[in-house]
Length: 169
Image (cartoon, rainbow, N blue to C red; front, side, top):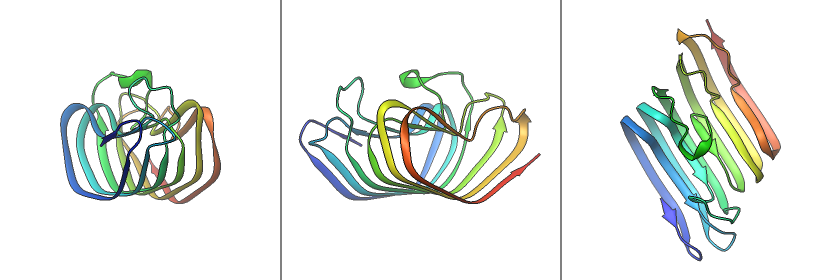
C-alpha cells in the first residue's frame, strides 16, 4: 500500500497472504507527515521471502517521517531465504517511520539460517509510541539462534509490551 504526499488510507483489512520467495511481502509506505495510514489490519502472512515479510516505511528514499496510526498484524510465519537487505536494512519486520500503535500477534519464527533480527527499527527519526507483541514462538529448526528478536539500531520505542514469548531450541 503506497500513499503519496497528501492522502489518507484507513480502515484496510487484508487476510491470507502467501509470499512465494519474493524480495518482500507486505509493504506499507507513507511518505510525509501530511499523509496518513490508520486502522490497518493484516491477518495470516505465510511463505518465504528474500528480505522482509513486512516493511513499514516512510517511502522509497522519501525525506518525510511517515505517519501511521494503528497497525495490527496477526499471524506471521515467514522464513527468510535470501541475503537481500531491501532498503539497506534487515528484519522480518523492517520498520522506518512514525507509528502511534503497532500490535503484532501470533508470530512464528523457525529458521535462523540467515541470522537476521526478527523486528528491526533502524530510522533515526522513527518513533513507535506503543509496541505490543503478543504471542511469539521461536523454535530453531535451521541455523543457530544468534540474532536479536527486537533490534533498535536507531529511533525509539516509547512503550513496549511483550507477552507470551517462547523460545525453544
